[in-house]
Length: 465
Image 1 (cartoon, rainbow, N blue to C red):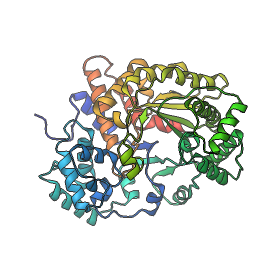
Image 2: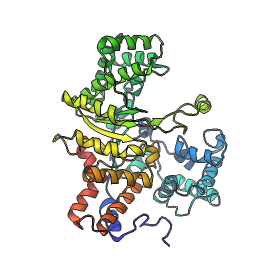
Image 3: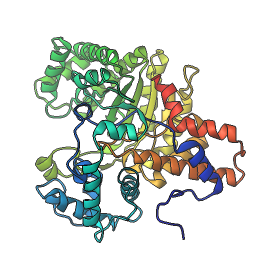
Image 4: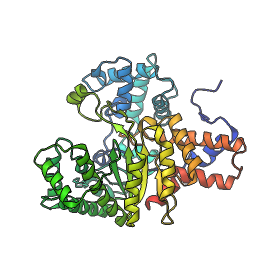
C-alpha cells in the first residue's frame, strides 16, 4: 500500500518519478487564465483565517457540501468561519474520487505544512493549526503567488474595466506580472437582461456614442487597444454552444436596435449578432497578436430559485451537450480565409468533444507559431484525473502533445496553484507509463524539453510574454 499523498503521489513508475522530480516539480507557472482579483492582489491583505482563503467564493466546495446535505448557511450564508470549515471538513471525508479531495490536501501540505487527512474527525484541529500558520506567517496574495513560483497571472476583465489595479501593480517591483485578459461576454450576450445598459456603459468607456452595430465593434476595438497598452495578450469568450450564422449589416443593425429597445431576439438573430461580433473581434485579436480563448459547453444557472437568491457563479452550473463541430469549423475557417485567424485555444466542457477539438486543431495550424490552434487543458468539470488524462491522450493521439501550452488554474483562490502540481503529476504518470511500456523512446533530453515545455516554456513562447 502506498503512503497517503506522499512525495511520489500518483507517480507509479520509476520514469514518472524521474520526470516529475527532475523536470516538472520546480518549473515556474504561467497562469494564463484565472479569476483572481487584481484589486485583491494589489491591496495584498493578510487573510483572517483559512475559511476566508478556502471557502469564500469557491463553488467547487459549495457543490460538494450541498451534495452532502449541508445547509446553505454553511456555504454562502452567515455561519461562522469555523462552522463553515468544519462542515467542509466533514464533507471532504466523503469525497473519495473527487479532485477536490486531492487539491485540498496538496494545499494543506504545501502552504500550511499539514499532512493530516482532513475529515470530520480532524476538521477542528486542522482549522486551529492552519489559522496558527496564518497568524505566524505571510499569507498575503502577493506572497502566495510568489511562493507558488508563478511568473505570469492573466486575470479575467470586462472591456469597460479601467484596469486601474493592473497599472498600479505594474509600478511595483514584483517577482511576477499581473496582466489583463479581454472578456467581452456581456457585449455578446444580446439575448440577456441588462444588454442595453451594458452597451451604454461600453460606449461611455470607449467615448463612442453607440447607435449602430458598427459602433459596437468600434467601441470594443478601441477598448482592445487600451487593454493592449496595459499588457494584455489574451482574450476570452465563453459560449454554451458555438454560434455561426451569417448576416448583412442591415440585418445586424435591425437586430441590435431591437435589443436596445428591450426586445429579446430569437435564437437565430442572437447567433447572427454573436457571429458577426466574433468575426470582427477575431480580426482585431489577430492584428494585436493576441491569443483567443474560447470556452465551450457550460450550461449555466440551472437552478432558478438559487439564481434569484444568490446570483451567478455560485455552483449551479453543469455540462451542456450541444453539437459544436460544424459551427466551430465555419467560424475558424471564415477568419482563416481572410487571413484574420488569431492564435486560438479551444476549451470543451463535455468530454464527448475531445476528438472533435483534437482533430479541429490540425485544420488551421500554420508556421506563424508552433501549435497556433491549441486544445485547451481539461477545464472545470473535466479538471479531474480522468479528464486531464483523457485530454492529453486525445491531444497525443491526434495532435502534438509536446507543443501543448499546459495548465491554467481558472480559479479565484490564491492557494489554488496546487492544481498545477496535480496536473504535472498526472502528466508525468501518463508519460512515464508510455516510456516504461516502450511506447516512447527513453530519451532524457527530449523528455525534458517536452515536460518543461508543457509545464511553462510553451505558454511563455506562445503568448510572447
